[in-house]
Image (cartoon, rainbow, N blue to C red; front, side):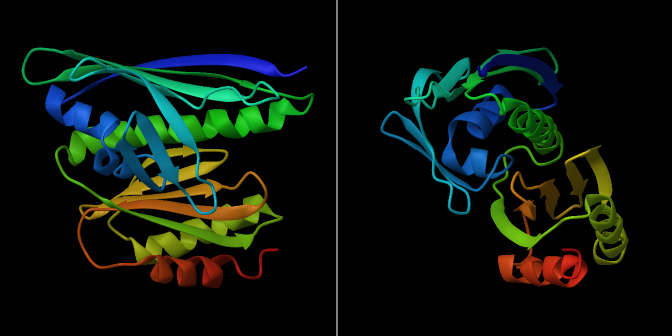
Length: 227
């Protein structure tokens, strides 16, 4: 059967049009709020996130105004497309409208759609935090896949307790059933319920030398017995 979807969101941020454009239409900008490492070149947006490496074709690119790209349609009809519309406002603020659309094939699309919806809310809120607190800066993306989790209620409790010690000054800026996001003056720290079982850390670090190995150890220690 499958499911066709479209979602739209609009935010106003205290950032310039130039900073917003950099965030949505350049590799280093996308690295600073979305997922993994990204490259925008030769009419394409390429991502590397763990073993996932999708490529999207750029379908619109009007600097400072309009950027869009789509994965294209797979043989089973699956695709996802992103569109960003940028508008300058007074007092150096900018309005950004974001539209995500696509198609999920099969009769079992509902679980994937739920995960996509909850994850999409995290990404949009991360973009808002980035443009509000770190505009014009570039982050190092850190991606870590933790142990597989069977009891998610217990996993989130353990994670909350461990983060209270590791990031005591952090501000929580987003939480839903599948995701958690915190901000410090050094970066944004995000945790996601992986679609097939693991806890995933997908952070954006603006200063300091913390590494993926550091966070791998943290997740393994915190969740290693929660299987």
